[in-house]
Length: 133
Length: 152
Image (cartoon, rainbow over all chains, first blue to last red; front, top):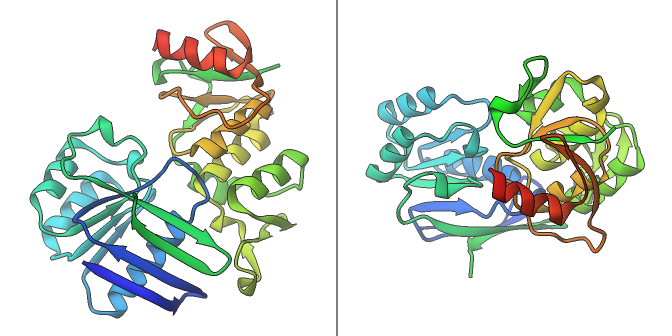
């Protein structure tokens, strides 16, 4: 579990509560602050000595797979995942122990088990992420 | 003219380059021009306000003017379509657009998009659009979505 409780970080107050291993950030709306959250989270993790891989639209599937195999990630962040997600990558994510935080608009295209949806809310200078109720 | 919608990659004519990575395209080629479409899109999706062709004010005022690269992917995609639609060179994949950004396709009258998963939650009262798909012209977006779901 990762809890960040109202910490001022990157010009905003960060409130994050990650309680699950396979997390999909709700992608039904644009402009909610997903990418901003991901960039802050990856920086926060590195500063706090947590191994974190961060991948986005600039990444290729094969490079992500290879990176996961080589590195001992505690967390992996997959932004714009619809652009590069594959069955092989899903298998790897499913069989690993790392916490996976992704933005995947069409998860039903893949056999992902145990995926939990989280909400991101960004207002004024508060950025919040928690399990979708 | 109308916004041309392709429901599969195979339908997209070879003279149109499919743009899947809208962030990359936007960051390289698209800038703000302060049109009415742009103002509404920026305000509704990103809670943003135009400052210059390369900057905007976001929702955290302390950050000052932000580079347009910080806009959401959905906003960037719609701006790509608006700015480059008339060039007739590109077909923009809208797969990464949230519902709130997608509704702005109703305001477009040119350009081409790849819309492989034709659904979205209708948020507007005004459901008019100007969409052509497989030779059929649609003026009501609900009709288009219902038809597209059947044929895909």
